[in-house]
Structures are given as structure tokens and as C-alpha cells.
Length: 394
Image (cartoon, rainbow, N blue to C red):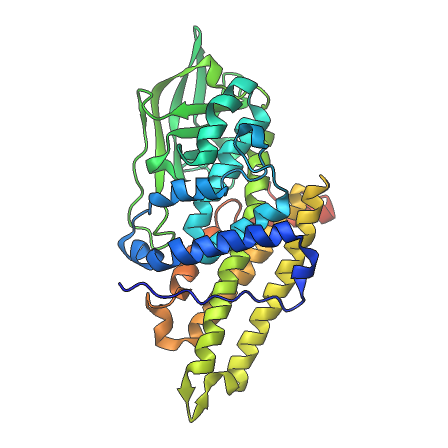
């Protein structure tokens, strides 16, 4: 497949760039240029072949996309949350699978080691993960326990001076190539604990998940633990219970809230260019009312979502953002992106289903993103419980 020139132009209908610092804009520009140069020319081919472009791990490490909010002492970027959001937006503009790789590495692997680990663990793992020398994954979801992780069956038993880990995890991004897995399991007291599992530990395998129609350029797999011997020093000492993994998911959901706007922007930009060039009935289809309606609604929803995540980023920087606010933004961005991808595909007609354009790939990817890290319905119930004080989960 011939590589196409990436002509993406970012919509900014409400002049939101005025709210960003010069550093924010430089960071966004560097990631946008990276995506144009290294991701856009290859991603359709990798998606068609359902292959993970392994070279991006080192590239994103060098660019600083892994753990950008982690202190520089441990190899992170020491940046604020708006910088992190802008990075995720630009990566997902390229492909949701690329952003997933970065989200998992930064929010689900590096963050728990930084926040819940000890100094030895931080020094051992974080620099290698930040640089892209090591790839990490996060093991929470199980074959029979997705939205209800408290019912997990994976167990951690104490034996002498080590632990024995048994169970399995499913739908794990990065699993087939990961050197490190942060895994959540129940101990003898039924407490959920986090442990760091390393590639090569006996009884630890990562079968690849095949046959996906979504996130095809992302590596997905299982984590299988058959009496895996875990050294005592590999347990995360500073967390116990579901608040540990849920704290990680809050950080990752924040990145998704920004990231999916990037996918929506790409679909909108593609549809706008196409509508101006495609001639039917003697004029560009952009001149027809129904196509203008679609495009106008797209840019409106993108603008609303941009305002929502910018404000959320400010709250994150001030330490005031609640998990429920993050939940709302994740759900909203995923929903508008999914709808925009569908409308953009219609504007392109038959061409919209081909790999010549990015829309169908985004459309399929977003079907995963609207489901993982809290489904659309679960996030609605999180907001519902927050505003009513009543729990509809049980």
C-alpha cells in the first residue's frame, strides 16, 4: 500500500489555543510531526495486516510519550496534565492502538509503580519503561470479570518468602511484547494487591489474541499465571483494595478523554477535505445542506469536548479533579468520536470503507475504546451515582 502524505489540520473553532502555553503548543507540535512522519505513512498497512509496529515503542520513548507526568528523576517528563492530554490527542489522531500503547505504559504501568511502589521498584523499572527499552502491560480484566473487577479470581498466596500467582487476565494491550506486567490479584485475606510480574518467570505466558476487527495495529493478548513464583520485593507495598487499580484507570481514562478527540478530529478533517473536492450533481458535496449539517455537528461536538477536557486538565493540574469528572469526559469523548467517525464515513460514501482513508480504521478502533476502561453504560452509572447518591450497580 502506497504511503500517503498526511495533510491533517487541527480544528480550533473557539480559539482554544489561546488557553495553551507556548510549551503546550511545542509539545503538541512535536508529537503531531512524529505522527505525520512515522505513523500515518505506515499505519494502514499494519492495521490491514493486523501487525503491531514494534518500532514505535522506542520512538515514543525517545519522544517522551511514556509517563510524561512522572518526575524526571525516574525518566519521566515532569510535565503537566494538559501536556499529557495533548500528547494522547495527537497519538490517537494517528491511531487508537498507538495511543493505547502509550496510555498503558504511562498510566497503567509506570503510574502504579511510581504511586504505589517503593524507591527500589521505581529506580529499577521506571527509567527502562520511560525510554521504551521495556514495554509494560496492566492485568485487571479477566475472562469472566470485566466491569466487575472486585469479583476477580486471580489469586496470590504466600509461601515461605515468596508469593504464588495463579489465574488469567484477558484483553490486555501490549501483553504479547511486554517485559513487565502490573497484575492485580486477591491474597488470602481477599484483599486486592498489585504485583510486578516479569517476562521469563516460570509459568507466566502471554498468548496473543487473534481475529480482532478493532485495534488491529495494537498488540492484544492474555496473561496466564500457572503457579508463578513472585519474589516478595515485587509486591506494590503502598496500596490495598480496588482503589489501587481504579486510581490507575482514572489516569488512563483522562488520557482517553483527550485521545479520542484526536480520532474525531482526523475523521472530521478527512470528511471536510473530501466534501470540498467530491463533485456530484455539478457541485462539491460540501455545498449540499445535509453534508453541511453533518460537518457543522461534528465541529460543534469536537469544540464542546475540547472545552471539557481542557477544563478537566486544569483541575487535574490543581489536584481537584474527581474520578467522576474524568469518567464523564471519557464517556463523552468516546461517544462523540464514535458518532463523528460514522457520519464522516457516510460523507465519503463507498470510499469511506477503504484503507485509502483513515475513517473506517478509526471507526473500528473506537468500538473498542468506547468499551474498554469502563463501558459507556458503566460511565453513565458512575455519573448517575455521583449526582443522585444512589448506587445502581447492585
